[in-house]
Length: 187
Image (cartoon, rainbow, N blue to C red; front, top):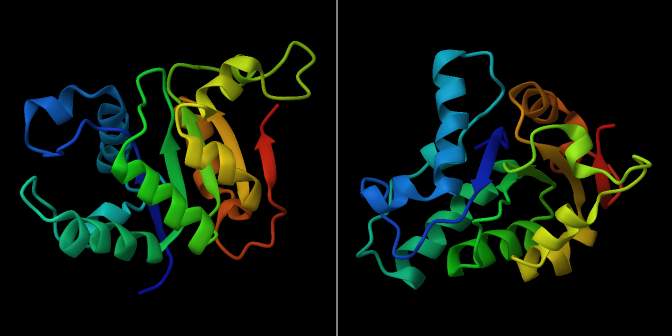
């Protein structure tokens, strides 16, 4: 299978069940659903959902024999990881596995979407030369991301459809692009 997919990583409380009200009430899961809705209403929107490439998992599925291998299979088919990092994000077993395997084993670039930030300026210091403390503080919510992100190119963007479209079309944030590992943003 070709690496044409975007693997979306987002926090949901565990155990996860996509059909339960609990999952749909988790804000990070709702942001993922927004991407799917944009793709559903506009086939040219450049989101190719890696989660659609394997069978769904259930709450009762075993972590080691079913859930973890399914996540890894989806990640192997992906060109990057789209990570939703919000004020509501919490460190979970699944997020830790997704980011650890995706970054440290597969070297997948990351596009981080900050749903609580609406414009590019909301991410930057007043001089617009670096990411601000609001952004860097959020990294502490996911220690595996914070501690591993220096190994891959990471693009930081706000929750803006146009900016997300631009980021998903940006070939520098795909596996094997040759882009130097670093933090990037649009200004």
